[in-house]
Image 1 (cartoon, helix red, strand yellow):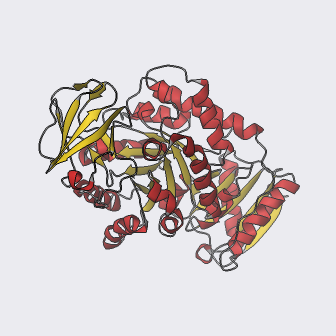
Image 2 (image 1 turned 180 degrees about the horizontal axis):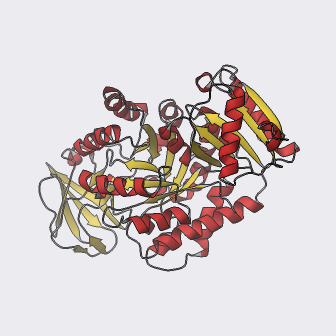
Image 3 (image 1 turned 135 degrees about the horizontal axis):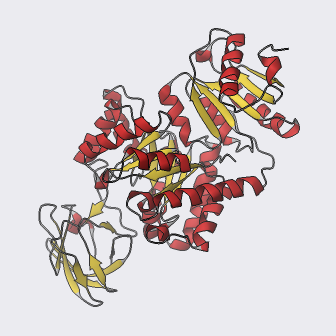
Length: 470
């Protein structure tokens, strides 16, 4: 049974052999995420090389660090007891030692105030700032724990004046541009300016890499509409989002962002701790299963695994669980009526709506389309239909981009020169792949004036009639 919800898996260059990647792909992975916070460009090259040997259809998503604050390196984990007072200073070149924590943002102390809370390692440790002395802060630990090297640091309610891109980010963006990566997911997007900073670099390289905005703070939530004016899609990164914003608000924000992305016809990924317990345990908790199911009931395009597949003990099992939950939810959920708004009376939107209505009222096996830019595919994905959409693409890059969109099964096809040639080639491809049979009825969308002119017609018929087989 097919699944329509896509799976994004984070893979480390320390565990990326071809048999492992094949097992992940067969289990249901559609997109591989490279977390640049924990990799080098050389390691990423090896990982990408192995991915391409597994499948041309797997999309690669490079996740930049973005404007984040981290602790500096420690020789050994630093123990913290409740009530301990620590000094915090902004100096990326100095190590952190017991009693003194350095962070990688030089102006950290300047932006802080007495009464602010410092959360380390996704909120595992909390400190309250009690004094500010020149270039250092004094903060009291609110709970016991350990501080390890280069752990994330959050300041709820404080807007740090960080640059949108680090030097490592810039190097990775250029790397993505010249290596034909499908997506860049940029961390801690606050406004459209963060997206435009990346587009400026990509523009110089004449790159078509698509940008996914990671929403991880209140600024990003507040500015989501302007962000989507410039971003290809959104990742709801609930780890930092749940630290920056009250945890009880996260489900509502997740639903809000998903609905906006569907309306704007943008892919949306739900991420962070979806199967966190499976990093160490062979079976998930019931709450994790419900979390995955709720994301799918909420109509997300994709769900994401992080540590579960990057370094966890049960990576294949984690993907298999996600796939099974997706299949079960998609088979039982109510689809109901749906429609998408058009922009400037677009024919593509009208045809997508008509295809969706036809698929609900006429017994059909599948929806078939061609998509030069991916727009027709994205419009059909926004309908969240119960039917698979087979999307023929005339570009390998666009084929990979559609790996992130709900319900799309994209494949490469040589451009046709006429309607009849397009129908024959796309249907014959699907027949050969055993996706459809001659007696199946399908909905087919295409363009009357060649693939570059956009969708212009919709046809419903038996496969054998579409290719004039009698």
